[in-house]
Image (cartoon, rainbow, N blue to C red; front, side, top):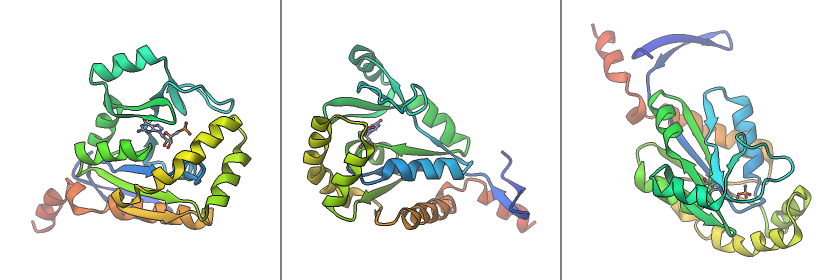
Length: 221
Ligand code: 5GP
């Protein structure tokens, strides 16, 4: 993309300034609604793509390989990790999860935003590795009762899996201080509006708008 060009959205012309993509990390304990929020963002915003993680966990009935995750074996995971193919990785609830490196690097450099649905351990690694690109959001449930009910309503995991996730949730919630933004998901529309506002503001950050110097130079003739 050139340093600046005009584009029309909602019938309005806007000057688009070249920029690096935002790495938007959404983390939460299981059942806080992060999956639903992620889907809403991805379905409504054409500028952002999901980072499709690799995982060694069993595929849920509703999940599609290559869309929600790349489902791989433990040896495949270890080989990818040991070849430095992962930007971050962690063991979560007894399974391995990791973010493939190459698609993220390509997207960010091209000015595409990337959404990461990863746990706090992954968020911490991304903050370490790419501090200028990463924006982290932690989603809290309104109550522990609601968290349990959401996990049970989802009905895609076995009872022992749900119990393990609930048992791990206080530990996960205690990591909230690592994050740039914290949202209480007591109302889906409200929480979605919050995420959208964060993304919109972060897209305007001077540091990632690499086209501003050239734009200003042209502006001043
Ligand atoms: P689930 O099994 O419910 O899809 O995910 C379990 C947890 O693992 C969630 O907190 C999810 O955000 C996290 N997770 C998913 N993919 C990754 C990944 O690539 N890296 C890390 N660190 N966590 C992940």
